[in-house]
Length: 164
Image (cartoon, rainbow, N blue to C red; front, side, top):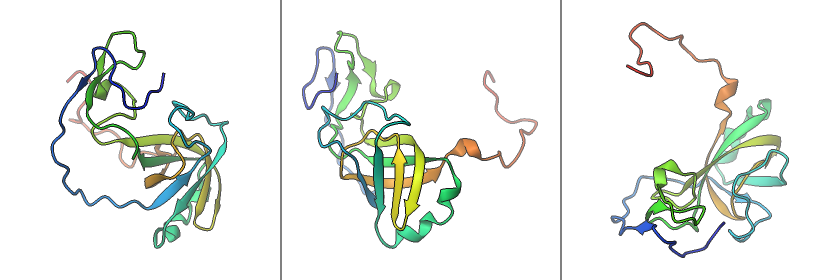
């Protein structure tokens, strides 16, 4: 169940170090029907509502060619999320897991990702279905679905393989 700022039994919060500037630039805003984490879906659905990704200038010209893809990977900053929990109990059943074993929005660097179905591109606006973020969420990046690309190079002798 979604919660706002409470800490459940067994969860662990830490004092995070001071933030340093990584040079991150928000390139737009995402417009969705959800204004509260309590109403927002936990994961987006490809048949969910159409959401608008509005790019700021000068980034709109970077959309050229995006309409050729069926799906886009959307990266966004979960600006209303806690950043201090290292162990969480998402099911509130007393068991906890580490933040990096979860897709929770509560993380040290609250970056959200969704693989969304592209509905269309209208000027500086991208229409998609499949998001799970609040209205006004800052946009970090857009990328075409990586599964629609052929790998550039075939595997080579000596490449790392699972089990090595």
